[in-house]
Image 1 (cartoon, protein in one colour):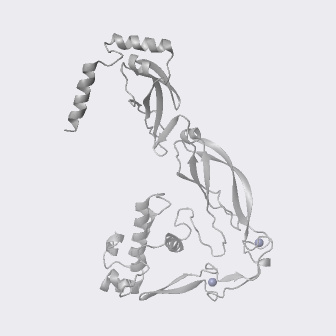
Image 2 (cartoon, rainbow, N blue to C red; image 1 turned 180 degrees about the horizontal axis):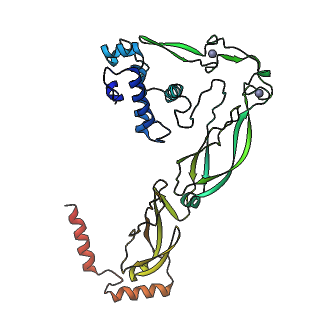
Image 3 (tube, rainbow, N blue to C red; image 1 turned 30 degrees about the vertical axis):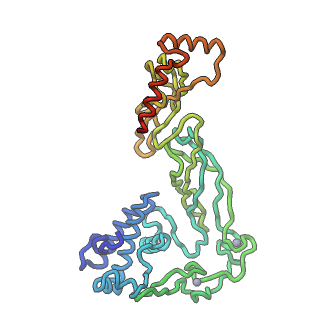
Length: 374
Ligand SMILES: [Zn+2]
Ligand SMILES: [Zn+2]
């Protein structure tokens, strides 16, 4: 991926104009946008490459250098490692958002208003019981969200009084040099606002926000699993204009005592007493939504599996159900009463096996084992 041609990456001709380029970029960036491809590493990598390509080709001087010298020309001569390639995701998101505003049509990941001191989107981890995750539920829980401090209007400055940022002289940007090129970056001190706090607001200690508690109820779809992320629109932090961002909920599902979940499949271990395994048996086992009968034949083996299609977990996207897999575990007694021992001896003898191994059987067994090593 790293050495792909930037024109090929953006699927444009070498002589395309700026507006074609921007359209091509937007199309691909939207396709690979992290909000559309959560937890998809490949999409994230593609998103980065597309951004890298656009960063170069949309800048006339960089594009000229690239056309003439290729990528090496941009990497700043001998041994110099340019800032390309492993682009920082936050920087890329900032660039993307500054170009297309808001979240580029995604309802806002980090819509960077430089006067907005905290991110409007927030994230929490939520514990779910096994059944809540499998069947879905309306889940009520408490959250905290940030809201602008009334006393400073969210600025974090005492009485809202700000002063020009001395790091960027109020520009909000600082110019960085890399190889041949220089480009502007957001000022690290004022985060692009161009102004900084002279004296901190007493009420919020300069943070610009206060936290509020809220009890919310969110519909959890059936089939979610640990690590899945759900966006709850409008439950994030509140801007000073009263607009709420989004809350991202990451699930942590508690394990069940009996069922083991693997994706959309459910495993259950079925203890079977050794006499049942020998005799065969009909036994009832619990499933996610009731019971099933196992019809076990004579001589059922340890770890044998019985599979019930469509009795697993509903897929959170498609609703298609996985499998229920019942695995036999043969249980043997570890102590015997005299009576039980006699019964078993009697049974054993009925199969023609003597309780003390016959000498000739012993001999032949040892002969065979010895022969393995010859
Ligand atoms: Zn600054
Ligand atoms: Zn305040």
